[in-house]
Length: 160
Image (cartoon, rainbow, N blue to C red):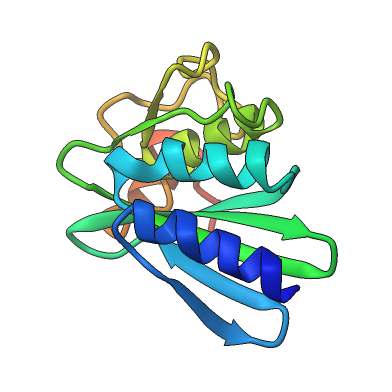
């Protein structure tokens, strides 16, 4: 990353109460609390012109779900991490900052159950079938059981 760009990202990270950590050449990570996320991403996108959101990843960490926003800036990559409690999986949508995030947020909603407040499509299914039982956990949660999903969706394979 260019030195000036790194300094600016580091400054905005400090404002968000965190720091920029270099992982390897041309790749850094910032972990931001949910309440500071939109402010930090606003600076990253609008002030530093980091416009390319490559994807958003969701992880089940046990007590929390982690959301990682992967941005590309020239030849560099910045991973912005935030956590939401699994007991109340809600996060603010970033589509007002990065409109293309809408589908990534829908994917994480389907697979991990995170509700993105402000996403107008949050009640639609993207990857799951419309008949997904509301009492089944999302499929990528550690509590989800593949056998139960197959049974409830009538996807049992006949044994011969």
